[in-house]
Length: 362
Picture (cartoon, helix red, strand yellow):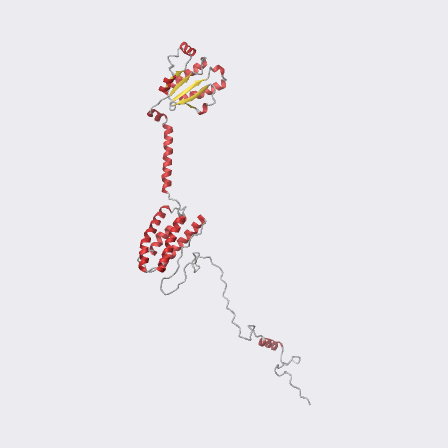
């Protein structure tokens, strides 16, 4: 038997259920209980009896009530009539001799079905599959709807592939680095054969990214654009030289993807870059991208002030200095400051003529 949750605190009527049967067990005559308890509990029991979809059958167990006055018998007769009017079946079990005599005096034996407890429960508390499904139709409907929602959620979730940004970037970067290595060290025939085998593998990655590159995965969008729009023009087996325009656009998309993936996973990833601008033999062309993935021409960096170059000073000849000769400038200044014909002006002195002469002795 299952006790009804909101009747656990009942004092007058203990209420439980067994299958489709509601079992009501009075604890004695109503005279031994308070009026407030009687009123509340009788209303709740009457409500449960009228819930015919849950409890179509009623069992009144008088095993704990050896005697009942008219008030108690009147209420029990009321719920039996409610059950009968709703199309249900009932039984009164464990009735004492005094109670049996009382209902006969009141001519209730024509209304009450007095039966043995075991037979009554076997008949009223057991249900077939159809009756159980009908009684629990609402509960089953809610359960089936919940299962359907769970199944839909699982299906939708299974159709959303996981975020594989890190693995996809590393896979594409490894392919590109292998292409760079083979481009520099393999002959044209071997490189064409490698590109013919590698291009379908990258197209498989592209197909997977096409299903997952949503707005919430911007890194996947950049990788998808790199594989779909640019890589086929680079990995074309018929190309003899590098398609530098497509390669530059491919590197730009992979650079944007790398920055997003590094920020997401807090890792440092290999840079996808072009090692050489040209493949012409015999030359040593400058790299198109530096080790950080930036263009060496600075077109993708912010403008920065560049200091003007300063020419180095020429080396001084032995015995001389790099200090400027100011002798002529000083003389010109003195000439400009002394007007011609000035008696007070200091005459110019010939340095060579003013050297001391030897003095003859007698």
